[in-house]
Length: 176
Image (cartoon, rainbow, N blue to C red; front, side):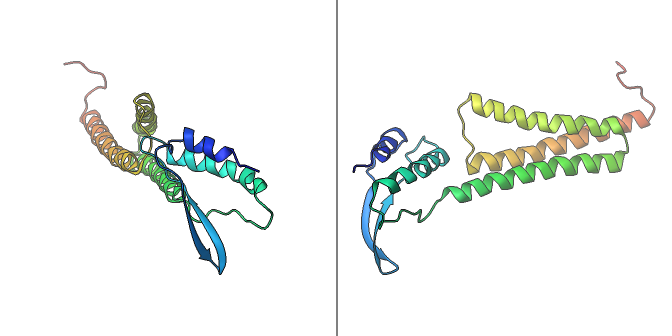
């Protein structure tokens, strides 16, 4: 029985230029064959790995029962962990900024402004990235984290300045 799903994946998932490499080795004193699937530049490694994983049961069904199919290594686990870490970092950043502004300024509206502006800036960044066709790689995640720090810093300076002028007696929205 021929397994037809893997060639479809190779031809449509960005791996057509590089053949899958089969190497005969022994693992745990058993004969082993390794199928190395690598993503081509310009294709999403997470989607490629997910598609391979969905096709593995079909491959297992096509093989004799004595042959076991298993994943030896999956580099996407570290990529997924990086994305989760950045998500946690961004959530903690927004939460800490809102808390610090509220604790130090003790003004509700001074707290509401950054708590709305920061998530909108992050969502806007993701929207622009989607429109331009960018994907979330480690470099763009690092840049997003750093730029969030810049936005946070600017928001705090702006709000402190506004509160300082209001405390000095100027009316809000006063035109000069």
